[in-house]
Length: 83
Image (tube, rainbow, N blue to C red; front, side):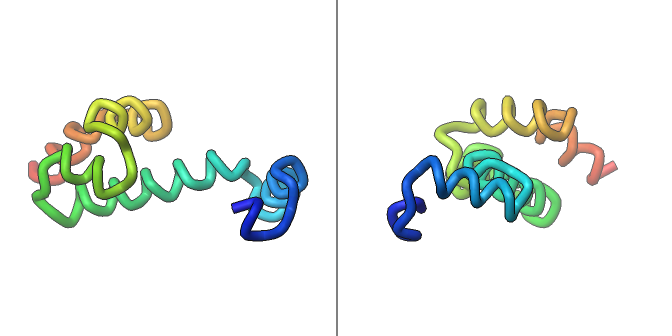
């Protein structure tokens, strides 16, 4: 992203954080998790498919990050919606 903006990585990161309130990596992670949450709520896709579609390397990677940020496992979120 920095190269596309014709900025150094340091300057891009600093400016991105200033404008968005998050570091670029945190922003991308947040957007991926938002998409995963939407797919969990609105589809019946398997967790592994959701993980890959959202840019995670595995369902385990998605589960770990989801739990760290949201406080619950993705499977728990999906179960709570069906009850």
